[in-house]
Amino acid sequence: MTNVNQRICLVTGAASGIGRLLSLELADRGAHLVLWDMDADRLEAAVGEVRRRGGKAWGFRCDVTDRAMVDHVADQVRADVGDPTVVVNNAGVVSGQRLIDLAPEQIERTFAVNVLALYWVTKAFLPAMLAHGEGHVVTVASAAGLVGVARQTDYSASKHAAVGFDESLRMELRRMGSRLQTTVVCPYYIDTGMFEGVKTKRPLLLPILKQDKVARKIACAIERDRRTVILPPFIRLLPITRVLPVGLFDRLMDLFGVNQSMDEFVGRAEEHAEPMRRAS
Image (cartoon, rainbow, N blue to C red; front, top):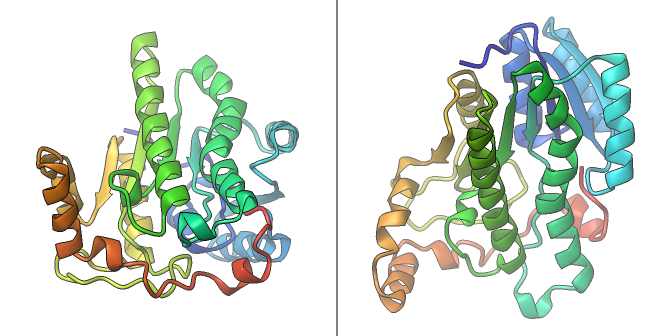
């Protein structure tokens, strides 16, 4: 079990959405929060919200796609707060366009934030975790990391990479005989605004998830050392459907509305206003 009480927990992309709510959940469990984000104003507000609830929090502006900046800010965290016991790789972006419409810069940005940042952030703190003999690395992936989705060629591929990152890291730690824990989170669409406009054809089986409930599930999974968080439960059937012929599998995904889900996607307004802005 990972005891977060009085432990330092670092969350990337912590100024809004799941990152913000997860930070509040962990703070309510007694964790000391280190919040990373690029949006200075929202970051300050998130830190203030934790403190108003009686928690301890520090905010650091950091572009997780910038390896040198990650290392520099990680040094600041160690000097000002200490070594994190829990690192939550939550930062993520989505383009929501067909491959033919994606600009090269958008594709690069998706992989910089959703994939490469996993390496820069985890490598910055993993050595100390190994030295202390305790730690927990959380990777917020997506159900799109388990199945390809139309208008998500960059996003889905990046989340497949995130799932592979978690699994390989888990195996490496196991081979090392380490007690460190990993958790991968694979939720369906969440009502955070990141996927504004998406629709679900089968709401009973594939509901749009409530962000506060997802944050609570992740916090509980960290405390209980759960290896995976897959939401909703219906998503767990995906590996079974992989035994079907490809054509039949594709038709099954159409039946559940997976490949039509992005047809009315609009996303967050600020990301459209600054399409090349690096997310936290």
